[in-house]
Image (cartoon, rainbow, N blue to C red; front, side, top):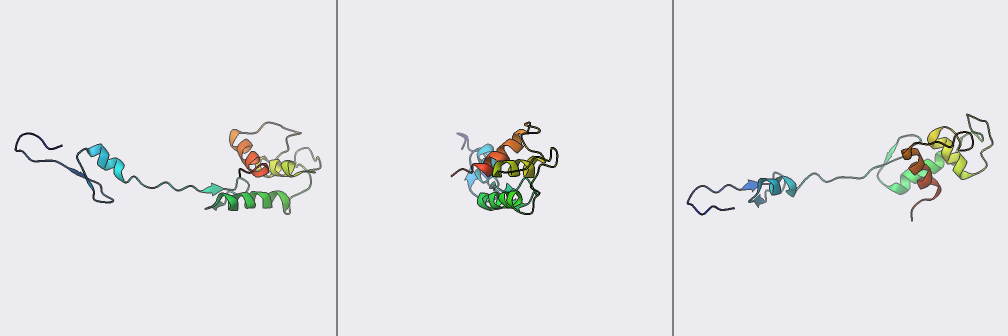
Length: 115
């Protein structure tokens, strides 16, 4: 802010848009870097710009050339959920129902996509 006395006035300039601010914090917060969302297939860890592309990639792993049985218990994988579980975590929920929170979310997103 401008002071009441006749001294020098300090302003703070945003380095991105050159807008001037009275407060240094306002200038720092003005044009923070834009955050971009990326979507990663948990099976192959390929990055995608669109959630739909990552979803299709994950589903491709679960229906493609993947084996028809769980590599841990050799149980036949007769449904999409079992295939996705093996694709994401490396085992089915029958032989080991424990998944990390990230694996749980990836499985849920693949089997029941938001929409």
